[in-house]
Image (cartoon, rainbow, N blue to C red; front, side, top):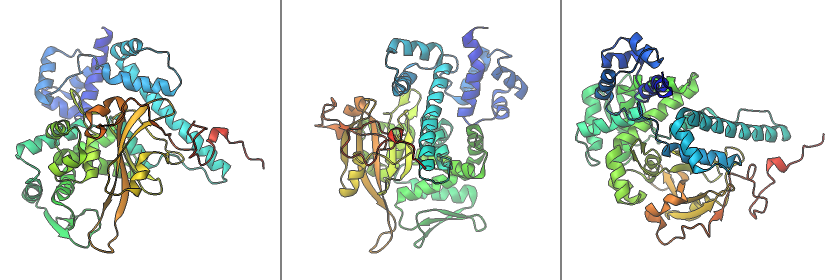
Amino acid sequence: MSASQRQLGLRLQRLRQRHGLTQAELARRLALSPSYLNQIERNQRPLTLAVQQRLKDALGDIEGLVDRDDPAALIEPLDDALRALGHTGIGGGELRALAGNLPQIAHALLDLHREHHHLRERAAALELQLGSGHGVAPLLSPGDHVRDHFNRERNYIPALDERAEALYIELGLSPDTLAPRLRQLLADRHGLRVRLDPERGDKRLFDADSRTLWLPAWLKPGQQAFQMAAQLAMLEHGALIDTLIGNAGFDDAERIALARIGFSNYYAGALVMPYAAFLRSAEDSRYDVEWLAQRFALGFEAVCHRLSTLQRRGAEGLPFFFMRVDRAGNVSKRHSSTDFHFSQVGGTCPLWIVYEAFNQPGRLLTQVARMPDGRQYFWMARQVSSGPPGHGQPRKTFALALGCDLRHAERLVYSRGLDLQGGNAVPIGPGCLTCERLDCLQRAFPPLWRLQPSKR
């Protein structure tokens, strides 16, 4: 058996998991016994042409099952990981050979790099906590673990994305009809009423006893549709979501609950902004977020989040990273379709344009920035707020940042008239505690590796 044949079982298993199917479910679709499918996945039986055709009929896209993974999708993250570790002498040809001939090894190296990154940050956090006399606590919260899982999937969940888009097409939906049609769908299929409550905060509430979904009355129609779509995901795709949670390895109540919210919200975003139509509109508008928000009747934040998920194989959008921060520097959202990650220790860089957005509400700001490893990025940032309208009503305020590698910036409407050669790039970093820039005028305190152990 050749090496490529030995990889077929693992690829079939991953293809099945991407579609959120158990072995029994896929075997039923293929008219095979579960034990036969199990033997194929364990490379104990061949994946015949007849079974490949059944797979294509059952799942549609089986690209990557027989052919090797596309090396181009692995070269950039591999290069990033190696540069971050100080290895700059490995050329593009060697990376292409590794990604093309040994894609599973390439993925394993990227996983190891992510784990190395987290361990370094954890060590920094432990040093900080021990030095300040505080108790040691785990660095990553349950929410961080859930977000990291989405990022490892390049922030794209095909099983949910494809089901949402299929429903949008099946019902002939449009941004104008989405909210009323979903309201009717919930009533017809699930006997569920949607009611607007002027006293509610910003969360939906599902009352199972009365079969009522309560939504804040101040939400716009597109935002109402998003909340209804998230509830629809729970009702119609609960088993799929449970499978995705199991595949992610979450086994404690808090992570399971957060993952369920994350997957249902992902489905909602994919339904109100269906992949093909949304990507086409994004490309046609040169990724004009404000125009897209108007086109799909949604908020600026929802559009930024969706832009960070457009990684469907063969129909990729720009590889964005998306973050949300408050005035205190707390990062409450971080989503990436690339290997870009800010430090989770010691805040983020005050020179980053996202913090200036608080001083210029209503304006969309841009920045060309350079990280300590030399990589250059294009950022756009804007302040957003949400909550019930009216004088004296409490509102939440955040700043959003949407970024990409500088080489992609020319495809964005926001880059017009800017120097995209990086000559005037602003030097920023991952946060003072872990940043290597010792000559920064904005530095608040030395990096942890420069601090001397305290004498007791």
